[in-house]
Amino acid sequence: MRLSVARAMRALGALAAVLALSAPLGALAQSGQVLINQVMLKAQQGEAEAGFCATTGWRVETPATLAANTRFYDVARVGSAKTFVDTAGSYCAYLRVEEIYSDAGRRCVRVQMWSCKIGGSCASGTAQGCRGDQMYDWK
Image (cartoon, rainbow, N blue to C red; front, side):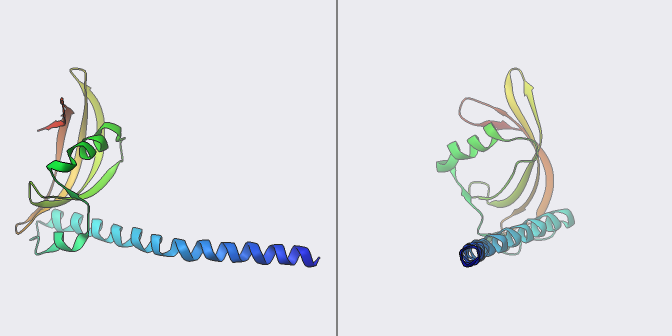
């Protein structure tokens, strides 16, 4: 009987450690969702960016990250999503893949995007891109 109690105590201790470690991850996910909700609302209402992008901490995409950016679309499925700050276009965004299709033998994606132009206004819309030699050609 004593052995079972000791085993149960160890199991409870391990569970408590896992829960303690996972709490910050849950908080991060929740704060990430709050930021996504904010950019979506700002875009839907056409609000000013007003420094929002600087507060997100989202991954920065540059010409140097082109391969990783392209890889996202190469493996994306309907529902795949990402947040980022684009330094070339000077905006931050949340986008979600809405459709995957083929056009002239090329992989294509249609995305819904909610974005804020740094120092400008926020908006939402769709974009379509098809795989080119090194990246996706967007229209």
